[in-house]
Each structure stands twice: as structure tokens, then as C-alpha cells.
Image (cartoon, rainbow, N blue to C red; front, top):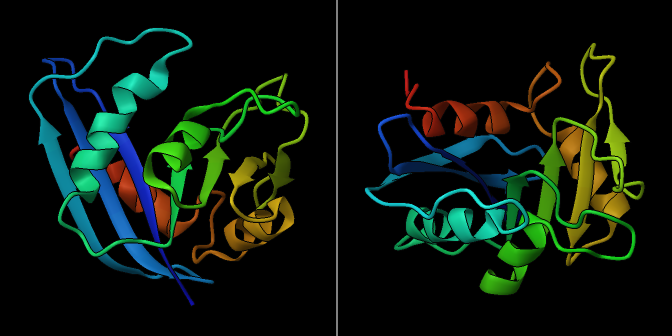
Length: 166
């Protein structure tokens, strides 16, 4: 079993940022715990430097939590087969752990991303990774709990980040 975390960050209209974390074990990833952290101030969005906005929020939600062995982020680890870093690569470098990126939309340059179909979905998720084999990362995402395109853990962390804790 691998103790894994999934993170997501949302930026509400009034300002600030809300980071969410769910923790569980792979394979399967049943959510065992969850946490939300609020940041009163965040960096403005800058194309090409998105990670500078996301990293402080991700660090904040992980602060004080028992360390995870692997992190799943919403987005790409790398943006092309040559390794141009995306959010996941910056997170992996900052935290020193393997990262799986799960993107909901295709990024044309990311021809190396593995499309993963789940449930009855006809539209894939796009999986990238660092610190573990891409085939293993795709298998973990494919095998995560939930009957829908998005695994339950990723749906939950998205809802928490958007303030829909119910």
C-alpha cells in the first residue's frame, strides 16, 4: 500500500485561495482523511508560472499532516515529451516525492500523456507522472474507486477546494 494524497486549489472570486487534501491508500484510494487550508493572499495568475500560485497553497494544506508517499495533482506533471515542467514537476521538485498528474482536458503538446477511460466515460483523463512509471500511474488512476470518469477521491478534493464540503 502507498499512502497517497490528492490536492486541489480553488481561487474564489473575493480573493484568496482554498487548498484541499484528501488522503488514502493506493491502490484503490478510499478517502481516509481530508483537510482544507485557506490562504488570505495568493500570487496573481501568470501564464507559464502557474506553479508559483499553486505551490504555497499545496504546501499549506500539507503542513502538519503525516507525510504522504505520493501526491496526485489536477493537471499535468510535464507538458511535453521533452519534460517541459508543468505543475506536477514543480510539486515533485519542491516536495521530493512522486507525483501523478490527472488532467481533464487534452494539452496538444503532451503527446506522452496516457489517456485513461473510466466508468462509462467516452472522454479520457490524461495521466502524466514523475518518480514512478507512467504505466503504473495510469493503472493507479484507472483502479481508483468510483464509477465515474473522475475517481471518487478526485471528485471529493475538487468539491472541498470549491467549498462544497457537504
